[in-house]
Image (cartoon, rainbow, N blue to C red):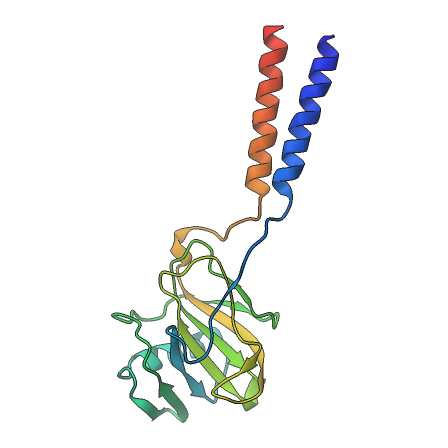
Length: 190
C-alpha cells in the first residue's frame, strides 16, 4: 500500500514538473518607427561593432529632441521628437546577430536598443527602451522609409541587474522539489 501511494505521489510531482516546463504563451509588443520610443537613426551604421554603435547612440541622444539632421564624424544623424528623459549615456552592450526581430528585455534595466539595417548599405535605428520589460518585436524591414532588411540589434544598459526570464525551468525545478518533499513527508508519516 505504501509503495502505491509513493508511486501515485511521484506521478503527480512528475506531471506538475512537466506542465510547469511547457512554454507559456507570450505576446510580443512592437517597437515601430515614428512611435513614442523611436529616438532617430544614423546613416551609415558602419562600422557596426558594439563600441561604434554605443558612440552612435550617445551622439544621437546628445542632439536636441526633434532637431532633425546633423553630421558627426562622417555619419548623418536624424534626431526625432521622442523623449528619453535625461538621456543617460549608453553603457555596456549585448549584440544579437541572428537577424531575428524578437528582443527580450527581460525584467528591464536596458536603456537603448539599436537595430542595424542592411549591412553596409543602410543605417541604424535607435529606440529608448528605459522602463520596458518583456518580449518586443522590431521591424524586419525598414529604416527611415527604406526597404532595408534587419542585420542585427544591440541592447545597451545593465538589463536590470537580473537575468532574462528562463521560460519555466525554475518553476519546473521548484515543482519537482516540492513534490519530492511531499512524498518524503508522506513516507515518513506513514
